[in-house]
Amino acid sequence: MKTLNVDIKDVLSTVSREQISNLDASAAEALDKVLTGTGEGNDFLGWVNLPTETTEAHLDDIISCAEELRASCDTVVAIGIGGSYLGAKAVIEALSDSFAAYRPGVEGEPKVLFAGQNIGEDYLYELQDYLKDKRFGIIVISKSGTTTEPAIAFRLLKEQLERQLGLDEARKRIVAITDEKRGALRTLATEEGYKTFVIADNVGGRFSVLTPVGLLPIAVAGFDIRALIDGAAEMEKATNNADEANPSLLYAATRNALYQAGKKIEILVNYNPKLHYFAEWWKQLYGESEGKTHKGIFPAAVDNSTDLHSMGQWIQDGERTIFETVISVAEQKYEKLIPTDEANLDGLNYIAGKHIDEVNKMAELGTRLAHIDGGVPNILITLPAIQEKYLGQLIYFFEKACGISGYMLGVNPFNQPGVEDYKRNMFALLAKPGYEKETEAIKARL
Image 1 (cartoon, rainbow, N blue to C red):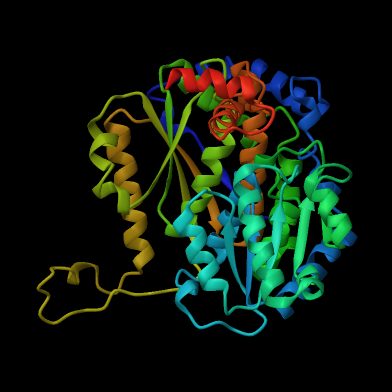
Image 2 (image 1 turned 90 degrees about the vertical axis):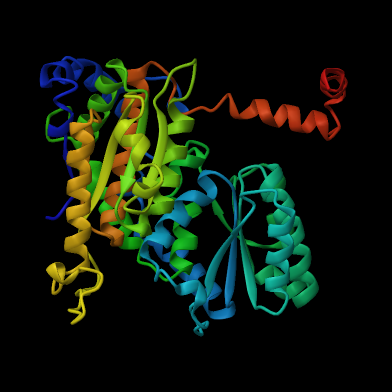
């Protein structure tokens, strides 16, 4: 069975195998907390067994809903923020034609767009302008229905859809993914008769990509969610034992050893532009899970070889507080050879006849060697290909490692108390009812 592989040999000039092995007991204890629900945040562990517990009937329901949207819409807007959009965006971007946005629409293959992930006035104006002559549908994702960014977007797009189609038809084009029983969106969905899917109480947003939150938009985009879940299920089983064959355990222990050795910044590196948004998902997963009580590795990302011409100098010669985790994709979907040019003015005939990916792999290897020589430890994750099954493996691998790593660090990996601070200030500045004292206090600071 093909599966992702984790190689840590290129960190050993910074931390020894003994230093990593010294964390085995801590890593095993952290894994046990994840598996048995005995650690902090154990009310948010619904994602742990999710792949193997996902039923065919559940997937059938999601796929059926996706097919209805694909048949009735040329555009579907997924409304959500944080984990309610990043997972779906990451998978769709990874699997899509790089130039799909510029190609003519195809009947039954709607474009999936995103809203509610920002409060950009121009963005929302331009989105609504784009949709004014489109057959569009909405997937609105929110446990509460009151999160500011998606709530604004949904208010605007719901009104537009009802105006363009009428109330009855609009109801058929709106799907709500929300709490099972409570919240503003649940109330509205029940009153209006929207098709709904449930966000389980025990699954946090950043761990929700393998629930309807991610699966429905991915299915609407035309990708195989069964294969995605199958890959995640394989990785779930591969990461349940506290032994050296557990890739999530190895990754978590290695990054904690590097952190203890003074490596405070982790840079996720890819050499395939399709993985850009996967890195954005990863940044949220680790940043929101570990950045607490003044602890945590800072998650950053680069797209190489592009960013070698911008961030490469800093990574090579800057402050030595960094390490890299490189995602290398073994096989490409297509083949493209470099042609011979008789004039050879660009001097590239020495690589004529080679695959583009061979040149890319040499850029990858050369860069890794240069950075290692420059004092930047490297963890290498090899992904067999960018396909649904392997993306499912990669998603679950990082999720399990995140829970283990957070517990090893001594934080609750499943809450996000700091996120609430900006909300309180924003509500106070906007004079939201119920925040009168906060409004008065914050105005006194200005």
